[in-house]
Amino acid sequence: MIRSIIKQWIFINYCGQKIGQFEHTRMKSYMLNIFNAQIGHFLNIIILNFYLFLGFRSIIGFIILLIVDNILIRKIIKKLIMPNVIINQLEQEYNKTHKWKRVLNFTYSIILVIICFLLFVFSFLIQGVF
Image 1 (cartoon, one colour):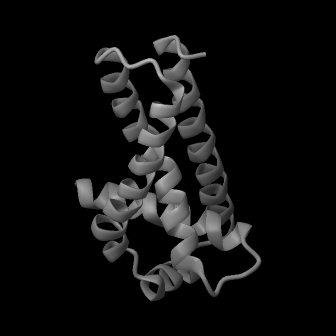
Image 2 (cartoon, rainbow, N blue to C red; image 1 turned 180 degrees about the vertical axis):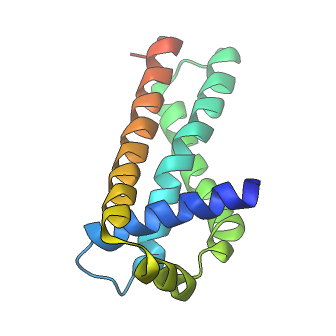
């Protein structure tokens, strides 16, 4: 069931990138950037909580921690999720899908990015950082 959800999530983001990007030659790197943006925010929330609970208040230390965290998140996503992204298989599924469903998936992908960003900002507001 979890694999099915992940495959659907990957396909929704693929439709969003396929419709939204003009250059389709670097689709895999575009997908990596989207996954990094969607997953990275949630992992940054966890790191922010540990950082604040330990009593660190230096903004420079936090920025350094986020930079290191984002580099590690990118490597983890590349290892765990990107092997499931098979562009040829996604392209075949995309071609079989009706146009209205493609547009719906494009809309879902935009909504996913917006929700992930808003949750990230909201987590900072809850913690009292801003």
